[in-house]
Length: 169
Image (cartoon, rainbow, N blue to C red; front, side, top):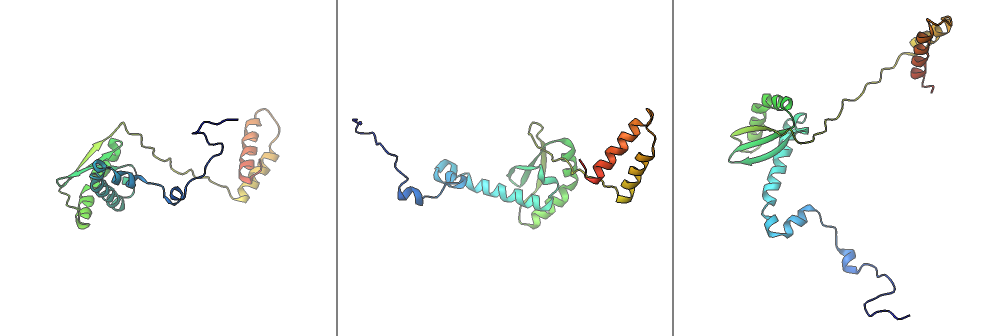
């Protein structure tokens, strides 16, 4: 069988230079382009400011972002008005701590960014467990009740409660 001159019947592996090259991350990409490299100081400063704010008010800054910081004016974005009101109460503390950390913050503004999709994690569900004495008492009550149409719903509820609290499926 004749092969064209550019065809290779086997696949070559990566060269030694390709094996030595490390993967590029986002900062390498930004530094490689001159136009993007000019953004690096601003991006680094904003990320550092975001970390400082999150260290000062960790509960509120889970859903807050630093939008802008120019001329001593800090602009923060919040997903809704309720969180913005909570943050507004904490602004004097935030500004004072930022100044102590070396940031020259003269004013702080809050913008509500309703369109952003912030996922607020649901609070953890508490699973209440009954003591073993209570579970056995409910089981005894279930056994003691007579099988009548009036007691069927109560007996089913007691059986489910006993089953849930004993771990029997």
